[in-house]
Image: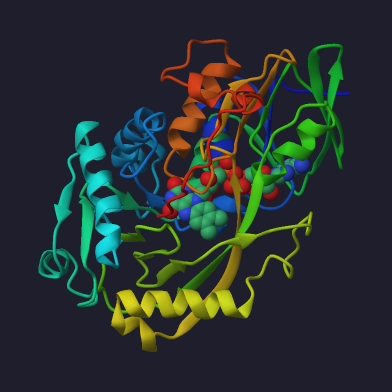
Length: 384
Ligand SMILES: Cc1cc2nc3c(=O)[nH]c(=O)nc-3n(C[C@H](O)[C@H](O)[C@H](O)COP(=O)(O)OP(=O)(O)OC[C@H]3O[C@@H](n4cnc5c(N)ncnc54)[C@H](O)[C@@H]3O)c2cc1C
């Protein structure tokens, strides 16, 4: 019988950040990851680090996250390629300017300095590479982006330095319980016991909870991601659009990373290296959207194409909670396409929950039971 104090399921940014925080507090943590670290959303991601355009319930977390990001490289002693050069959300038609103006006024009201760029000249004064067809934009200078693989690797390395046990290639197949108490997990490498289990398993969180009779409503969609070869520096900001159907940025490496319109993941179930690849028409559409926004991208050489799965809840807000049904069971999932930015704070909150401390930020809005109410409304998901 193997015993840990706290088991974390999932080696994305949420799980590794939690491992770092818990191990840093002297807790005996074992993290189990079925593939490699950052092999799902935390590797597929655009990795925009954004507080603009967030739901009010998420804003305190996003603001706290930005505070962490500005010093995270020093804290983790690693280069994360974090750049705080802003986010531009573009209106492509006059009809879309209302949405953009609203994002600016809500941001400013929430204490996030944001600017409304009312015409093409103002937009191109900030980002000269953009097309002369763009009508207007919001500009949030404190947003930015980072390298997702380097960030997850840095959290994992820091967690290990504090003594965490991180195991890759180990799949959790079931949660072990005794009455209303969590006992541990069943894995492809045998049973592992602990009084506290943190589920940070992304799109596969619902299937682990389902075996305990807990319903976690997630709609999974597939996002195409196109990455160019390295190009000369042309764009410092992260781009998004009013409808949410495109986002892009230029990495520190010079590569552009572009995401396009999502489609339902449907009945595919378990993803594989092949079935998660995006269909050709979505790839073409992503490149066309990018070229319309930044004309130089029309002739860019494509380096790589991949698909990413997004875990969207009915209100596009996550679940971050110690579940009341089972003592010792904690969940962080359903980040709905914007959980990378929150990662450092998610880790901190999971550590609070696992050690029985008062959460350091308000998380009442992120309880799973809100979905049982009829009043949950569908929310627009903004990427980037
Ligand atoms: C294309 C795309 C673009 C995005 N753009 C942005 C953006 O610009 N900004 C932003 O903030 N967010 C963005 N997101 C969302 C963000 O990337 C995710 O919300 C975040 O990475 C979630 O991290 P996580 O650790 O919770 O989940 P994941 O990174 O999905 O990690 C879960 C891990 O659990 C493992 N796992 C699952 N089941 C098991 C099991 N049974 N046993 C063991 N391990 C298991 C998986 O292999 C995986 O590694 C984007 C996502 C995608 C896909």
